[in-house]
Length: 278
Ligand code: SAM
Image (cartoon, rainbow, N blue to C red):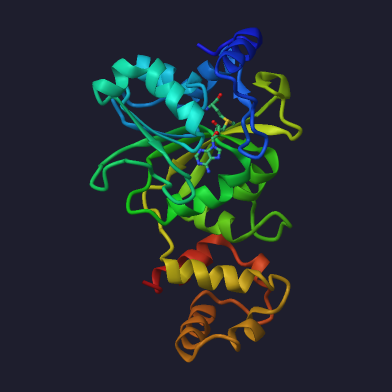
């Protein structure tokens, strides 16, 4: 259950902790939203869950009470210490694995590399959501489902279609592996303190045939997108001989005109390119 606003402020006072704006510390104080996140995730029983930024442990406790093993990554030393003490029985029984680290550097925390199935449930620190997501998409194993609280603008970019101004490299990497399972806007008063931006709860489901972009493929797409309004034919000319040949063949194969701009090329077509770049 989420702590009420007064319980949250009391706990923060007790911990001598002021919410850190830079770390996006906007804590959930609305029990309905915790329930909504869980019902939206519709988690198969016993599936391990990765949580980024457990904070005061509101979502964490709910997930643990439902019997999920939780792998959590929290950067804040004081909050991590509090969670370790507050949730000691779960830490001792290994149901809760807490890693104090930057989730951008450790996007899957202590999740075992050979894990078959896992889900993500997280009220993400908004400043790192895109960088973390890119790290996750480059990791060895993709989650089957993600339910994430995001800044609305970040969610819009993740779901953007070709031809819109929000469409970017991350839209391509994410939509090559996941499809939206629904989004709900969330009022600021569900958090303490209320964020100064709009929030969205978003579910993403892994595609049956995800195409994860290799590091090389991601670098190439990012490079191309720095000049998203230039014609793809002229951008290709700046590439290495190998990439140029590959991309010229790709344009032919996908029936794409060299005058098309990168921002107009559909995700499905970028997927075809990525399949050829190990
Ligand atoms: N899950 C809690 C909740 O819903 O109330 C807290 C969510 S709060 C929006 C974001 C959390 O992410 C904070 O606890 C913050 O300390 C943590 N955080 C911020 N940057 C981080 C990073 N780079 N790596 C891991 N955790 C981070």
